[in-house]
Length: 63
Image 1 (cartoon, rainbow, N blue to C red):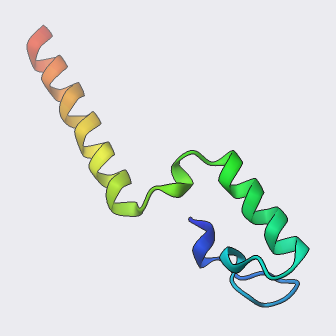
Image 2 (cartoon, rainbow, N blue to C red; image 1 turned 90 degrees about the vertical axis):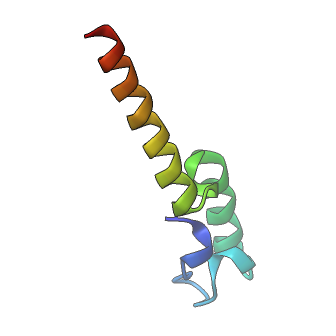
């Protein structure tokens, strides 16, 4: 899940806006900790499809 959809329990605003210190701290933590968090779901699905295709081609080539 990306942080732009999260709602802060402290101020009830979207975390992406960073209205309170809790929002800002969580936004920074999510940006640093999660490499794939910045990617949208379509990009993740496309990356997964490319990886599956590469494994299938490799398996076919070695068989």
